[in-house]
Length: 75
Image (cartoon, rainbow, N blue to C red; front, side):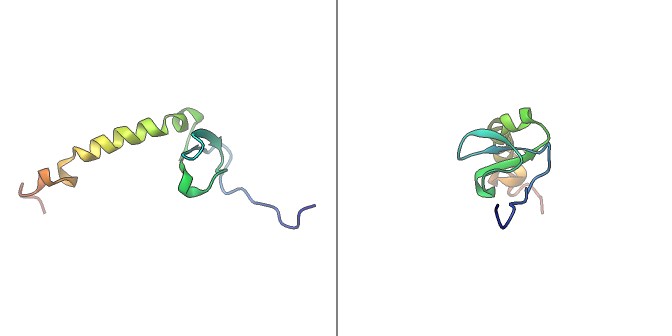
C-alpha cells in the first residue's frame, strides 16, 4: 500500500491536450508545461492546436498588438 495517495489536480470532465505526446487526456496526466487546457469537451481538446493557430493568426494581425497600430493615435 502506498504511503501517499496522489491527488488529482483536475476535475472530472476537464480535458487537456498533451503537447509532449500529442494526445487528449481527461484530467491532467502530464505536467502543466506540456499541456493545453482545460477544455470542456474531448472534441475541444482534440482541436487545441488548430484553435491555437487560429488565435495566433488573429493576434498577429491585430493592429493593437503590432507595429501596424503605432502612430494611429492610440494610447
